Length: 152
Image (cartoon, rainbow, N blue to C red; front, top):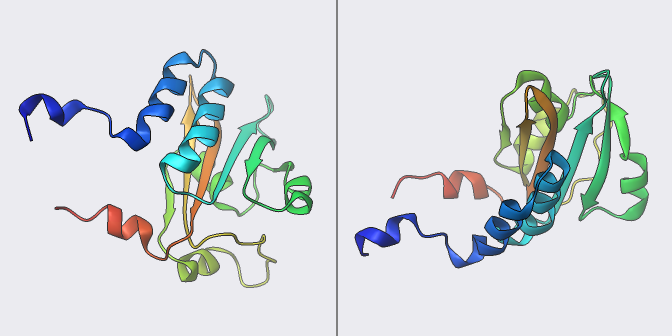
């Protein structure tokens, strides 16, 4: 590989990079990540969760990959919910669950789980002068994150 090629954007990420370049707001960036990131990352679910001004509730203007009745139920949820996006936002750190087993173990045993689509999961806080929300992606393959994070 030539030295100049080290900083080139892979073809699969070019639409995402272009959309991010055009986005002028937090919502625009998040929308680009959800709409373009889903295919670029080979994810099967993408969720954008924005925290309200009071910091008490999330609103999800964009949920892709879940059935409509699930989407309707999760359009709003409390900021203190024990779900990966909420935990990522509260902690300010990504939550990476590498397998279906890790996803199941993440939730308290007495808590009903949201419908799962995919296996591995990444929940990432979004920051702009503090945490403003989070992005969630689910992946169809077990241990996808572990596989992609391995050094060459």
